[in-house]
Length: 112
Length: 112
Length: 399
Image 1 (cartoon, rainbow over the protein chains, first blue to last red):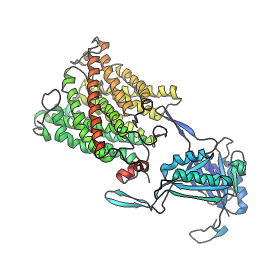
Image 2 (image 1 turned 180 degrees about the vertical axis):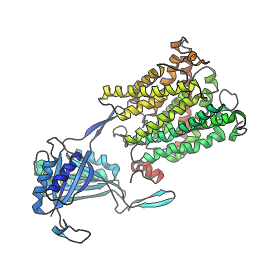
Image 3 (image 1 turned 180 degrees about the horizontal axis):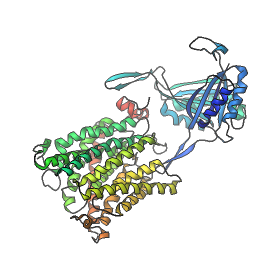
Image 4 (image 1 turned 30 degrees about the horizontal axis):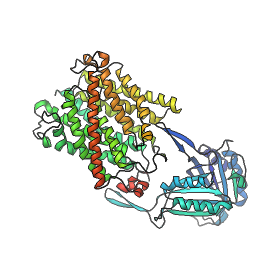
């Protein structure tokens, strides 16, 4: 099992969610985060003073999937989240040693 | 590649960000989280009733880096986030199996 | 006081009371999220302590007797003030003026934001009210400055210039916020700022039009002037920053509105026609640049009390010297330069503001120094970093 973490542009959340549901992903956790990469933030002006806002709003998705579903899930996120403009985000994958469904106590692939 | 996750005191956000930029880190994600460790929260008072707030505000940093810079990045975060007082936070490192830049589809180190 | 006027003064008093929480939101939104409750509390505290101070001593010391410099103790604890004669008019006036007394120190809170100990603020407010607000109020309304012929309809000199220069003195003793100016301190909640702006504008109709202390034509003109000057100033500020910085901003519009309201305050019952547009417009333009002074001069007036209230108050007060039009009001005040009055009135306006500024600056500086040497005026660096909401009040705004 793998944990897929994706940082995307906030307005792409619905597209990515729909794309993941379409390939059969049943559960996703999202959080509102802030971040920057190569695009390096933006500037805001208050009473004429310019403030460099490094961290711009992003959405973080987390989903645990079976090893064999990783490729399709990553492809789905990539296709749905991409605008071709800088700041589209990143996806990383880490290994999950164990997963438990709290209600039933099921473990492993059954708990996904 | 490694994912470095750091939980720090919120007011140290800017210092840690600057330290990471100085260490050559070009992207990072932060989120507002709540947590407690040994300091075990704090108390707030409303209409004379004291409420124990276990989960106090914290900031979580997530950064994906190449293996060879993990030590220096941890050192930077440690130096910038430390106040010497209880509640300074934690840093942990996990292995990243795969990394994708959404816009270009680049993978691995070149996607950092 | 005849019934219509009594009604209007009472309604106006309630409108002015509402301005203090409005100011609290205006400032609180500009603050950081970890200091917003402290800001609200600093403002709320003014409407807790000042009504008491005003009833016990402030009103008597600022309006009792016929002295040039200070009142007397005749109305100590509102003694001998009845409701049978005058239909309760004096009592209504005392309540109305008490609201002004409450919001004036509250204005200073914007300058000392994010770093002043609440215990020091708790002492500062009543002491400042008695040593600075009360005498300056007396000089302007029934004392030597008013007798010389200077004009201040609703408190440009007595309130905004007075609080604005006091804010400068206070931050010079208090020092800069940690990280200012290299670290940005952008507003944490612009919607809160906009709510505060709306409440302030609403309440300001009572502040200015109520200052006729009568249901009169002058009140109607003051109302119209309050309406127009705020709009003109907001408009000019937004256009100025649009051209200068590239974008029209919410905070620019809000700041412009407040600067126009400040500027029209001293002039509201003395000018008419296009004058409020000119006064508001000039205030919007001047204040839009004045808020940049602090970074050049290096004083940390956190939320621009100097740039908006001191400068806006001076702009409005001095422009009376040009626009005052007694003929329009059938009034017995001096004529401005544009109405054939010569420079006399302008000179009196300058003198009145200078006198208020010298007194307010010196005494405020002194009060802050004494507080600094005794209980201390500043929170610890750790408390400042953790935020004043938690360190001063054991509360937090957002869970």
